[in-house]
Image: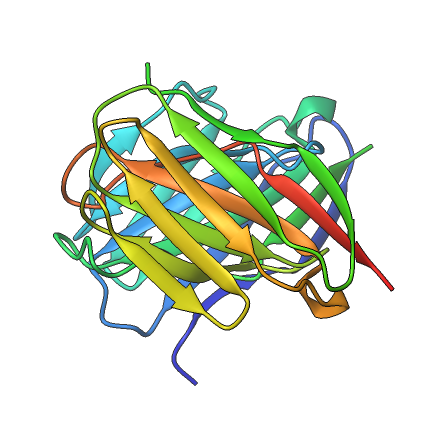
Length: 114
Length: 112
């Protein structure tokens, strides 16, 4: 199946821990994103990579570090997790200049920090 | 900074009724997207509106874009329970779809 897949689906961890979320797309897209959805369902862009190059870096604590080994993969590593990091993190992808093509989203990773 | 606001934030409606969700944005753009999100699920693309006056319809949903008014509407005709979900509009001001700013979302509940 062609899709954006992210793992894990659920992540429960304690404050201070370090965790990673992985994302892969097989749609042939060259731009990938991380979005954060908070408890009020508000969606905010965090990062965007185009062909492994960081192009968008919103005001995100530097505890969050994205890594894109190739254009089909975009991972998110979070250091020293805090309670406020609890949210659903969505990976998404699109084709550059493909304004006629919407973002394709993964199924989300629900992160709970206790 | 681009602001994208939707109203209402919550909408409870009976089956068979019609209603409209509004999406206002603060910066000139001629590219607007509508998404649907079911509880605990991903976001599903509904409509892509790329020019002033664009209108698209799919089943009981119809979306339109007025770039001069910086307004998009999502009209629901004869609502059915299956339409219950949260609906988001998203605006692209970059021209390359490289950065979408999402609206606040409208949670629609269709009651039997």
